[in-house]
Image (cartoon, rainbow over all chains, first blue to last red; front, side, top):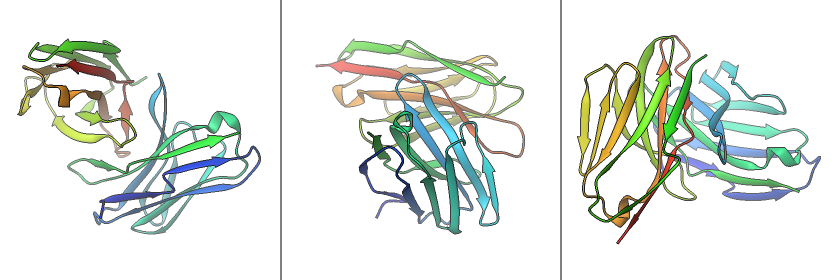
Length: 110
Length: 111
């Protein structure tokens, strides 16, 4: 099994729909992150969590929310999806040594 | 403002043709500089972490170096399987442990 698992891998949704992206990790790390990747813009931080009770906004949190259900689980929600949220979304976890990323969720909002 | 700039945006090499990728950064205080490899449709895969100017790390055909303003990823005698996007990221001093990414260099190695 992968260290960081993201579901779904691909999703097409309509404008205005609520959607949740899920992430689970088996690394045993406290720190988890959600990034989005857009062509020409690199990876940008949406939210991060240093433990179950600590959740923080990143640079582009508007339109997103998160839930840290357990040390191993960190989900990202789009309450009302819009087309410019079409992107590749990555979950990651880290310790003092480095980061491990999931394989990503490709989200298309039509 | 902390910032990372990578160049070139894209690079095409012949198999065996060595070259270097550049990562320039401005950060209030550098905790670490990271290099990742990303294949299409996959997440970034960790390659190296560099912490201080003058530090070098190697892995197979790749060698990463660090100065106070930039890092280079040297690729010696590349093979087609080295084709990927190479991402650079910096982590600033402080409690947040966040990475700031560059936009990457897309490397294509032709046989």
